Structure formats: C-alpha cells, structure tokens
Length: 363
Image 1 (cartoon, rainbow, N blue to C red):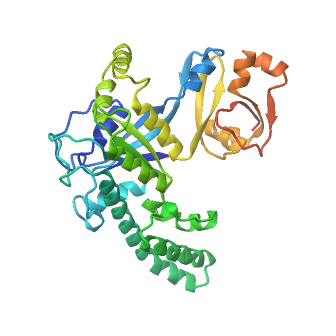
Image 2: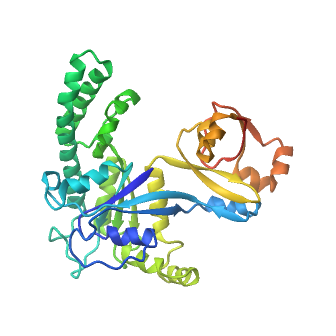
Image 3: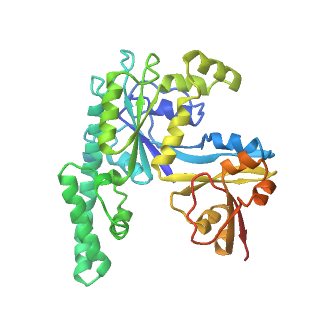
C-alpha cells in the first residue's frame, strides 16, 4: 500500500518528500509544477518496540516496517477542468491508497504562495473541491455503462448503479466520500473507479522554524478542520527536516537537542501515514533478525503469515504468539513458554498490533 503526498504548489511537500526519503535531488526553483512526474520512495516506519525487543533477543540485523510514498506535483484550482497539469496529476492520486496533504502554516516573503496569501483552510478546500469534482466526473462517466449492464439483468451492475447514485448525492451535498458509510459490498462495487475523496487523509501542517510545536493560529485552524473530518494532523518544519536529513546520526542528535525535539518530526509523519492507511505491525524475532511485518488491521493469522511467504498462508497450521510485555517480564522465549504465556492460535485468530509470532506451516 502507498500514500500520495499532495498540496498546492510551494507548500513544501517536495522538500518534505525529499527529507522523508533522504533524497539528494537537486533543489528546484521556486515555481509551480517543478515535479513533473510523481516521485516514489520507500521510507522506514520508526517503531520503538523494535529497540525494546532487541534488548532481549539480539539479532544480526533489525528490519523495520516500510511505507511507499509518492510525491505528486502541485495541484491548482481548476485542476479537474485541466488547469495546470490537471487530470494528469489527479490520475496519480487515483492510484494511491491514502492521501497526505501538506498545508502551509508559515509566513515567508521569499516563498511565493500560489494564491497570494497563506490560508491553510482555503488550501485544503481547494484540493478537496478539485478531488470532489473529479470524482463526480468519474461517476457520471461510469453510470451510463453500469445502467446499460444492469438492464441486461446483471445483479452486480444493479448494485453498482445504486452505489454510484448514492455517492453522487453525497458529493452533490459538498461532502467527500470518506464521510459516506458504505458496506463491504457497496465499497467493492465502486472500488475500480479509484475515487479520490473516498481515500483516508492525513494533514501535515508545514510550520516555521519558530513554531515547531504548532501553536500558531493557522495550525489550530487545521486541527479544528481535521477533527471535524475525523482526520489526524502532524506538525513538521519541512525546512528543518530537510537539514536534519543531510546530517549524520551524531550531528542530527545534536541539532535535535538544540531545537528541543526528541526525534525528527518525519518519524511522526511515517507513523501517521501508516495508521491512516489502516496498517499495523507484528514482529518475528530470532538471532538472525528481528523484523516488523506490515498487515492491514483485522488480518487473521494465516493472512499475516502470507506476508512472509504465500506458502506460510497456504500451509498454515498454527501460530505461537506472545507480547512484548511478556518478553520484558520473562526475558527469554524459553521462560515465556515455561510460564505458560506462549499462546497457540489457529486460523481464526485476528492479529493484534505488536504480536510477536512464530508460524508453523506445512506444504
């Protein structure tokens, strides 16, 4: 699964993407559409639980979960009608699983805002409107074919027609589709359309170097907007994070200490994106490696095993599970087993975030 980073031109999203992926790409000039094709990058998801596990199970290597990010070029008002580079960029958003919208929450006369003034809520609404208009267009294009197929007696097409109408009514009320309740069958009926406002969203408030805690009134407005939308907000100073990304570990730690941060704010973005995508981690731990594996929330034990290898899911027998708290209390897997804390779970077991597992399988 992957998340797409979107925003108006010059809000700092490409700076943020480069910092997240430790990109050494040359700095672009300060003008819209400097990212012509979407850039892709893989980032690790920092997880302090890995450090806690390796205190007791010392591996040759530690492997965190990873997340794929796509930097999508700046969207402008009228994109759904072809303004700027228009639908070309909107099509890139259709392909991602969640959206990270960067909004500018700092003043800087040297960085031109495409709208002439810094107003993060207006920025959010411009992009939301463009995505809703594009979704309306997609659904209007789809309903004719769906109705024709439905008239032939196709039951799936009949469901699709009703869901399209339901979605269009919601969009006509100026509401994004992520706020529309659909059951599993209804979601499946329109899943192939890549409806953009149905995707989960994370807002990133790009703040100035003098407001790392995000106390500026502009950030407060973003938080209030996100609360109403059921979304999360992460504050980050893209300029500072870009500088931190270029430092070695020792210098980075010194700089973080100087500005009063415990860790780069980018870590919060990676974790926030992970959560926005509906993902969680389980761990495998041994002398060879301690590793975080990515699964969708609600995955069963066989599905989780299949992330390691399809044979593990196909030949799943059982899963041996313990918790990080068990490890910290008993120190070794042997002692966890002797204490009766090593659980044996079957095919119906729903994984819990942070489970430490061994899978038994036979093919």
